[in-house]
Image 1: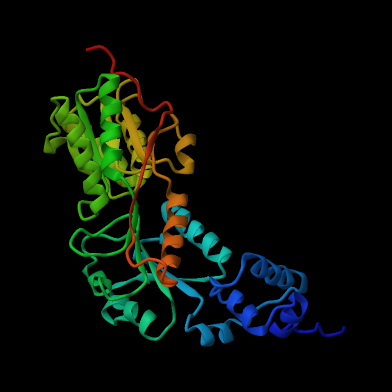
Image 2: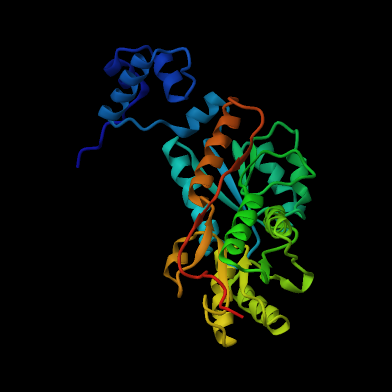
Length: 344
């Protein structure tokens, strides 16, 4: 079998009728002074010839590694989790489109203690980092604040540190869910939150409390439970809540997994959903439409958010922006897990 001829940058230059310098600038995405027509001619020649750039040579020339890291928390089966899977898929898809590869890292205590998060930059392993599953306890991230590093916190933010972030508006999500349940006629409502050390979880609670307070409805501590962001946690939280407060007619859960768990727990305790207790989630993950009953939830565009976070990281890497602080809107997805309360 004949060995396939290796296509070089000289072949691309010859095919496109452009200089070697022009082709190099286009391939390294440094072509802002080159006309769109010339850029398109070079890229068409690349496609026709099937040219594959030498990533090592590109990196040496541009001082870029062509890699970005996704940092996730130390959780059981984190990469199999539906939420993190959605974010990672979106980041991977966009990174691939712009010619970047992905490095996955878990923020284990030993990883942080040995300063490996800083070494990713110091040893030029990556050009940027996307931090997922961040909590207010992740104080090591303050080392990236104001350090000129291309780092973006995904779907959360840390109020104490000036870090780049792209996230959904969880305060609006809590208010939206509260107003929806109030409009249905509910006045005795509970909340299952994910974790008090997650800022967006606090935002959701604040928005929910704000909506209830404006309607003259209180949310006492006995109607707030921690569901640990899991189905099992949501199930246990719903049972605890209803055992103490059997008159509750509606529950907001901070994510869909806890909401689905809450539905299971309510049924197991003898309550019908939504006839006896309405349940509203937050995320609108794929499985939300396939539980019984299908889950009414606040739609937070997780895939789109992951893609946007990756886009903004690329802007930081290429020097197009210095700061990223984005809050994205949310909306309700109405299904069948919430209805007006039954008459007293």
